Length: 218
Image 1 (cartoon, rainbow, N blue to C red):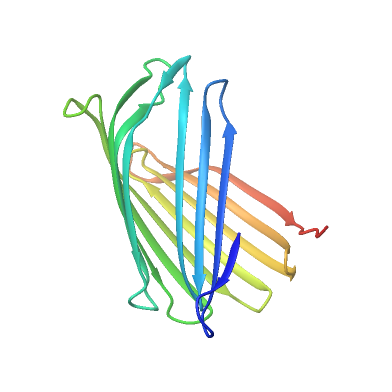
Image 2 (cartoon, rainbow, N blue to C red):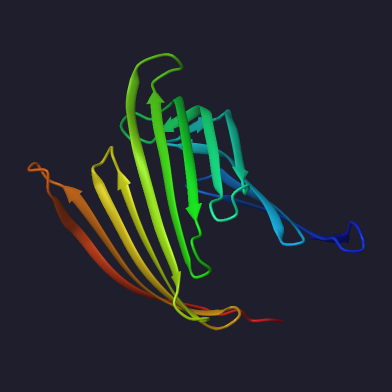
């Protein structure tokens, strides 16, 4: 962490976090990097993921190109754009291979008031067996979220996801209560729906969960 001052009235805070862990089996790892910069209330945050995957005893060395950008020109409606293209793994235990994939997406956040936040994300994912070869799938994913601050300590968040490929709807409702900074209680509800042959959505499962987060300073 670096904390510096650019001028008498400007304070800058920089944070860089790098994590790496082995996953699945020996030879596969996942890395994550987060760089965060805050200057007088405005911030810029960039995250990246890299890794090597060994799936079904096969080493996959991926090369991808990622482009992303964000704008806060409209203070109450920040938005971001991203795109990724390159090697993509087909996670099918019967036919694992390294194909070619492309993802494009946009996310928009609305902040009509200090208490209310609304967000909508859209992503389009396409996968080919080889670059320029047979297209195996092409689908859309929609993600919506609503956050409302009921009181200083109590907030509620609602999420609805729709996967066009699997014809599935996922819903989540989460209540959060902050007892003090770093100590938070959560009460949540999950529900998944699948589309049947008649075009209606049937509930597949339903979960209720309770979580507790405690920040212990040493």
